[in-house]
Length: 335
Image (cartoon, rainbow, N blue to C red; front, side, top):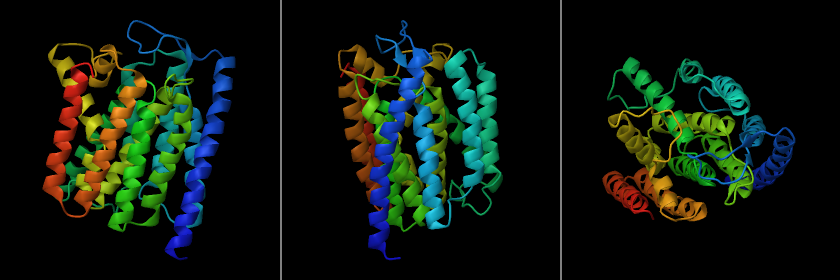
């Protein structure tokens, strides 16, 4: 099949996924309201009214359906796909229970995340080394597991205002698809992140300020898992710098904030309002303004990831660090 019909079919699939995700989110929102599964404001919240929590259910169902159709049509899947889907189910179940009942011990949540990551990594045979031979194979896999676990949790930590996780998912999915296409990677490396971005865009229609539904842990934790996998296999295909640049704002905000909290002796897994983007909201910026600035930053990072893919590694890396540093400083000043 020629490239043009394939591109046209992906475009149709993208638009269809956006629409289905929007409709599915509407249906899940109705069910959550009927069951009174609501996120009620407290002193650490960035919202002021009870809001349905668990919209990630809709997003995950749409993603799984769209991915199944894409893989059936393409006839192949990225490395470790079946194990990743198994891990996704584990994470969705434990996260949904926490959304509904709360109080799931941190150790249990981390244990389930570690099992999901280990399950997926056990099927990485034939996948290139994420660190491109800098580390011995065993250390490469151990470091990969650590990074994957950290990305799962940082994505969850960063889901604190309307629209921000949807913006990040759209940006990462779109950026990964573009990098994969430019780098000449196999079709599933293009289709799967593109369809994930489409599902997030449909959900974002309900989650933009003022949010009518939240992802909940059932959305943010599995999304971090899926996006972490897509980033890691992109890095293993030789596009490691692009895989670092695309999520650089999220990596920087979450990691710096965690480091500061550790230094202060705070309980790092408890909800707080110390992220840079949260300071911007506290300084008077609206959720929409902050999410839009993150989107603009991510757009620049996408362009720099493309430049890195084209061989302009050092200029792209230095420019990305500068752009993220400017945004963090702006948010820190209440922007």
